Amino acid sequence: MNKQDMLYRGMAMDGQFRVFAAQSTQTVQTARDLHDLSPINTFLLGKMLTAAAMLSLDLKGPGSEVSLRLDGDGELRGALVMCNDLGELRGYAFAPSVFFEEAAENFLPVKHLGSGSMTVIRSVAGKQPTMGHTTLVEGEVAQNLAHYFEQSEQIPTAVNLGVLIDKEARVRAAGGLLIQQLPQADPARAELLIARLASTPNISDLMDMGLGIPQILKRFLFTEKDFSLEEAHPIQYKCNCSRERFERGLRLLGKEELSEMLDGVEPQCHFCNASYHFSGKDIAGLIASLERKG
Image: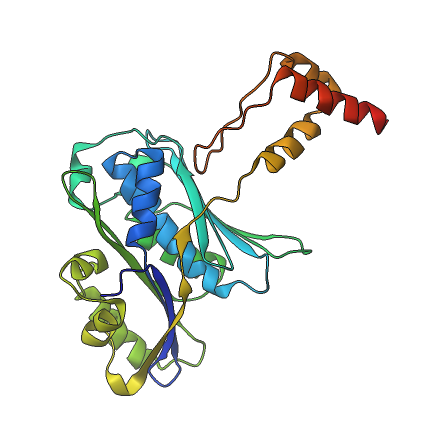
């Protein structure tokens, strides 16, 4: 099995269904390590990162990005993940240390999020972002993503997301499948595919057995004759924060608020936990530059 995390795209059943898939084990492991996630948060963030990676295959043009956000009023609260057109992912959980005993079994019931919503935002450079929003339903992240496509975009979609961890919190396998029915699809073929999906084990369990994404799709869902799949591009966890970005953010606060920070500040990035120190002298310099601009 290819160890490099990878996105795949394909077509199936005479072009009546499109297929997105992701192998995301290393990406999820990086996120788990960066944020020191509890098991349930490893499942939550890992599945959301995998989903966002697959959603990114629909992005148009350089500099575009998709954001996937879950918000709930329960103890788990939710998470935010982003993926750009290059397959660079980042994200964070809102309550990264929350622990539930039942979360030790590769399962994330959305009940732990409570009542809430799923939001998908697509951004293209130079254009107004588009946003879709649905209420959370019972089930897992995968069911909620399928529900989002059905309700917000009117696209019948099947989703399989998996994250498998061991007792030492190492990510053994992570991946996902997203299959969408195109308008001209034969209803009988759609029913056949639904039945096959229902009998397909979780993708992370299959990956842990040594099966790669192409093998899983061909063995459980499609035949060689009615299915084509190709590698799209690699994916990785990569934050785009920098000292310059934080400096621009500080400038936006204005002179009055900056004047309350003359002892220095050290903002921290939510996505990778990197911190950037700005001394009192640095802050004074920012204030002076704002004054010069009037």
